[in-house]
Image (tube, rainbow, N blue to C red; front, side):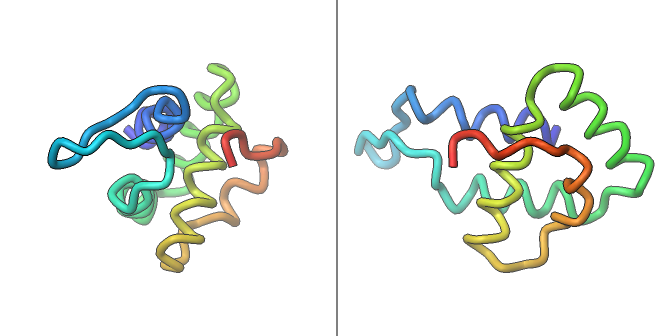
Amino acid sequence: MLLITAMHRLKHRQSNYYVNGVKYLSIDRMIWAADMHFLSEHLSDADWEALLGRAAETGLSGALLSGLVAAEEALGLGVALDQVDVIGVPPCGA
């Protein structure tokens, strides 16, 4: 689910979304940062390993890192960025 959330966030670099009838084009919504945080905070080491492997297999490592960095910057809630050091790729969409 975390990988889908990261991918969905980046989709909005090119696709509009609407809130109360107002059109936006941005990847920086607080709800996406909160989703990234809440979905990541209870992952076990095995979950992280599986997530990072799947991200690498699908070419979404940068999207994942970008979403986690955005969550940390927006919320300052200690998203587990130490877990993503093994990705080894720059965040995309930042």
